[in-house]
Amino acid sequence: MSDQQLRNLIKMINQISDNNLHHGDEGEAAEVVATHIRKFWARSMKQQISDYATSDGAELNAVSRLAVERLSS
Image (cartoon, rainbow, N blue to C red; front, side, top):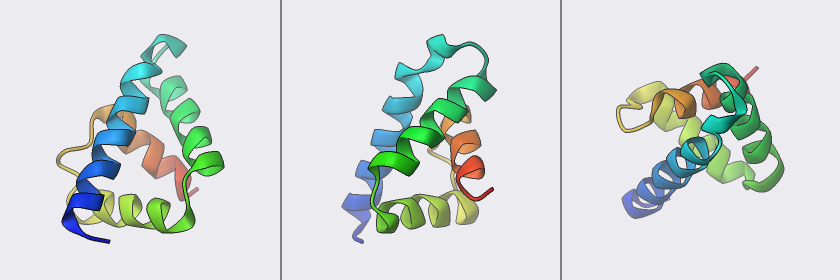
């Protein structure tokens, strides 16, 4: 994936997280986001965002970071 594709994934996961903050605390919102990603993102997209979160992750908001952690568990 290109840098532009990664930027798009970061933007998408942060938007999904922002749109699900109404689900209670950050943990509950992260679970909703992780479920969405499991269902609708391609394996390559999930791998790319996981790799980014592990290596840097600076642009991920708190809910997005929690969601990515839950993807690997």
